[in-house]
Amino acid sequence: MGEKKIDEKILKQLTKLEEKYESMGQDLSSYLDGLLYSDYLTYWDYIHLDTLLSLQSPRTAIPDEKIFILYHQVTELYFRMILNEMEQAVFTDPIGEETFLKRLKRVNRYLDHLIDSFDVMTDGMDQEQFLAFRMALLPASGFQSAQYRKIEILATDFQNLTNIEKRGELKGEKDISKLYESLYWKAGATELATGKKTLTLRQFEAKYSKEFIGLGEDVKTCNLLRKFEENYIGNEVIKSEMKKLDQKANVDWPLQHLKSATRYLQRDPEVIKASGGTNWQKYLPPRRQRIIFFPNLWTTEETKEWGQKFKRALASPHA
Image 1 (tube, rainbow, N blue to C red):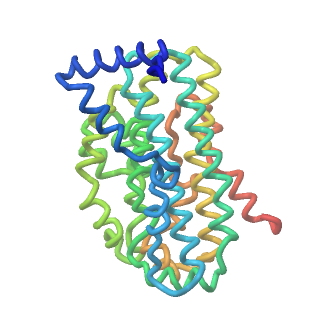
Image 2: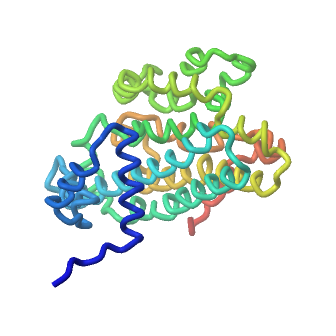
C-alpha cells in the first residue's frame, strides 16, 4: 500500500505551528511527540467535575445545609463571570462602543439569573433546619463576599459607596484609603449595643483591605462610571443598560437578600447572630443606604424613592 497523502490544509496548519514554536525558540516535533501520547480530553476532566462535587463540606448532618453551600458556591461563580466582563470593560483602552455595550448586557444578564435564583434561598430550605445549622457556621457570613465588593469598586467611584451618613462630609475626598474607612458595608457589620466592629468584619478587613484599596486606586479613572461619562454619555442605549445595572445590583439583588433574611431571621434583633453578627436589618434595605453607582443618571425624586417600592410590598399580606 502506498503512503497516505497528507491533506494540504493540515500541512498549512503544521507550517503555522512550526512558525509559532520557532518564534518562541521551541521545537515543534517535541510537542508533536507529546501529543502522540496524550489522552483525549473528557468533559468531566475539563471542568474538574469530581473536584467540584467534592467541595461541599457541611459542618452539620442537617440535610438543607448542603443546599446552602451549593447555592453560595453557584453565586460566587456568577460573580466571577460578572467580574470577567467588568474587568475587560474597565481595563481595555480603548474599548469600542459596541464592545462596551456587549459587556454591560452580559453583566445584566448574569445579575438577572442571580436575582431569579434567590428563591432557592427564600423557599428552598426549612426554616428550622436553617436556624439550626446556621449557628454552626458562625461567624462566617455572605457579607464576606470579596467578589461582590470588587464588582462595586469596578462599577463606580469610592465616593458613591460611602455610608450615607458620612457622604456629605466626604464630598470631594480623593484619598481612597480615607474613603475606604467609611464604605457603607462596614456599618452593616457593627454590634447593635456598642457600635464596635463584629468579628465577621474584622476577619474580612484583615484578609481583603489592601486588595480593595489597591483595586480602588487602579480604577479611579477607568471604572464603569468614568468610562461612561468620558465616552458614552450621549448614548441612550448604553445609558439604559447602565441604569439597569444600577437597579439590579443596588435594589433588586439586596432586596432578595432582605426577603430571605426576613423569611428566616424574622425581625428580632435577638436572632441577628444567625447572619454572622451583621446588622442586616440596617444594612440590607436599599432605601437606608441609597447606594447608587451612577447617580447622575437618576432624577432627584428617583434617588429619594430608592428601594421604597419593595418596602411597600413587604407590608402587603401577599409579599
